[in-house]
Length: 285
Image (cartoon, rainbow, N blue to C red; front, side):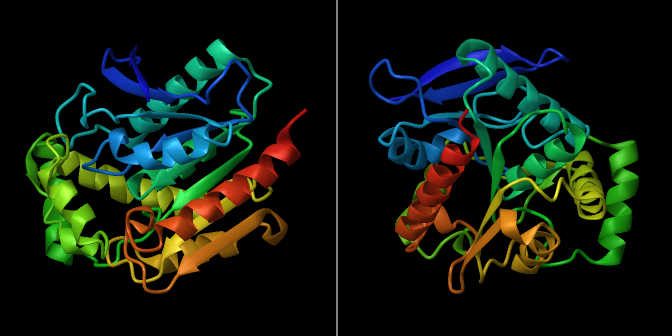
């Protein structure tokens, strides 16, 4: 079971927050803060949270602005600094309630992975113990035509809130047809992206790929090798630039974009649990 609360971002945008806590009064082993991808919402990670709370972890997630039950225009953001600021708010709120001594880890999927990396670059004093990157959006598998990119930049300046269909082929998410159907029928999922969102995404990818993060930060990369949305090569390249003794990359060659919702989800969860257990031991005082 999860509990819901609401936080208010610096610009007044309300953010829906979900918390899953381990049973009993004992303090959690650590916190995992989940950062979801574009068009979806944090409720889609219920199964991950349930598996982790059984082992004594606390899990928190939130709906991005413009997503799920949070405020804001669907599929729109003025810049990724808003996403990073919201993440910082949600993380600090948890620490204020539970204390600074409990290790905190981040898990970002797809656009959420890019948000996590952007956050880590912008908030190097955040005292995050490690990060899990699940098919992060570091490189698009299909590049937009130059004319379309140029038009997008112009529209981003003139009509920043103009929203278009994201043109997502849902069969590219996972090979599990039941999961695809659930995604398509989910009333909190949306298919809109604004022109400003798109140019902000491109700018964030360029910034993160050029600036990187602290190479000594422990990272776990969970990658679907057949992802045709976020190119796996982006994850391989970025992970290869990190300190190898602090970097773990697990790739499923036949898996698509959502490994955690596909045939390999059991192995995905096992890899996540094993890594978190080891890192919690290292990070605990």
